[in-house]
Image 1 (cartoon, rainbow, N blue to C red):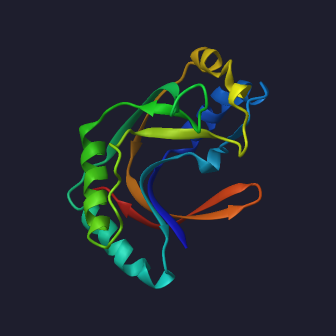
Image 2: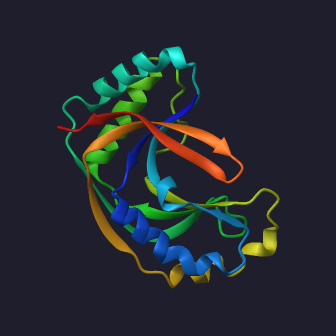
Image 3: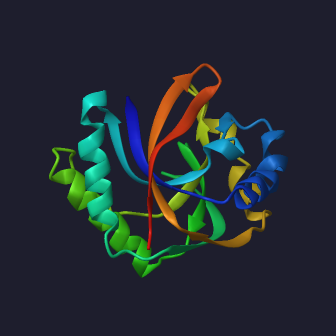
Length: 185
């Protein structure tokens, strides 16, 4: 199973976000855009994991969430990783939030003790909206920065659960399925 730990946004926020970026989808950028069902904030990518390990992953997620409180995600501003010349990811930003930082750190610690490597890069909360298509030309993104600057999106969502997600790769893109939800008290 290909697994990750995520915060899933309410459907209304996911729909609004995808509606906001829809004008860019017809501009010819070599990007695969996320559907509303694919929009989430990843806390930890676990990769391919044997199914028999699921109980220990659920236990680790439970420990990571113990004492944590619901997290408010404030979304605004668009950007890309790593740079506009050749972006790999188009994202909407998530404002810094101490509760989110603490939760992500606890998830990182709990899964590290199970042998999952800690992320080398600093946690930069964002929600992926699009990914560069394989073989995308370098010059194919010349107007992306300007196009993203014309968009306006501000939303806040209170997240009440942390989810262990399964990602199944299909020809039309990844399909996500919640394996386990841990409620934030």
